[in-house]
Image (tube, rainbow, N blue to C red; front, side, top):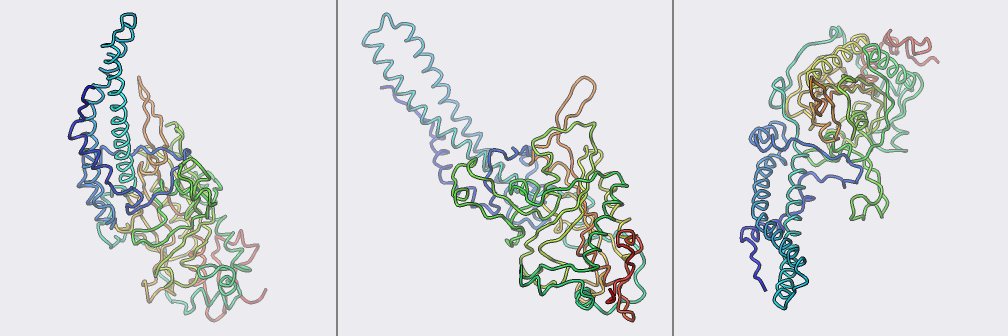
Length: 496
């Protein structure tokens, strides 16, 4: 029998890859990827060419679990190349064997014991080579999967406009500060005027849930209609999104079930035992999650599609119920409507070309400023620091309203809107492509995405109750801009 020589380096690499810890044990454990999941097209070459840039980004944004991933991607790519180089000898030998077998087949008429023995030896060698090549292919695929997952878990790069660290930069204010501060907070106001019932909700659902009642329930609807009317006037088209999404869609948008501190942040829908135990990725129903923001289903609308450049920029807006686990101390220490598990939010979203994303970002902030200015709320506008950016955002601007009840803890400020530029981070992970045409040829790229809160209802409700409270009259003044949707109600008091 002809001796089969497997390159020593290949043996070493195959042995090495067999000892790697499974991908599922890395800091971020992704949901199973069903066959319908979009295939990511992450720019891994850029990561390999600039590993230090991505490592620094992880450090700046407090993604400590991912800080070593860029260098590991570089090393695993080197391993992949070494396997490729060494396996080439096996493939060359395999091709030689196939040619020899074909030659012997053509000479069947003059077959002798020698040629028969030679054919037998070649077939045995081909079988051994096939087993070795199968191991090589498996090792290559495992390394590629690891590289893809490590890359997917990295946050976006950070804009030069973003302050590095934990402190935001003040950009400006909306409306003048109040001359006097009401003494009651929205929880007490809600109890006194029979507008909010936290006690009943604690019996039905637990901490962080609530019933909106009477005029405040109507005020919720008025705020939704008001925000939608402003956004549509600025050119946004209305879309009503689902509140439940596949977990792999949420992950592709940069939303993981747990935050960097390991705390649960999203609600996952329980699967059947068959789906949970399925070892085959395309079997069973894919895992589903309650969306924490309409940004997720909006981004997923264009998954696995190719958009035409002529259709951009595409701006949409919609109201939806949002769900957030808000686990940990920051949730438990916050009472009332400021931090809750379920809430209504009006969200803006846009797909743009590379050159149009800044204009879309600015447009969303103008919508936010107009909404809050006409509601009469005193607000401040902040360029948010690197540690406050979500995985997908390259830049984020928040607007915080003044809450009299938060004067002790946060100097009165509390976030009510946010706007983020996400470049092609989401579209690459959702396989949303862009067909661009130029003289002589057409090419495919990835559109940019931008998202922004038009109005987070519970927080704005709380701000209106607190800032509109009249201590002497024991009533709340409703902003004039909402009167149209309040059936003639201009103040909320005990007389109904």
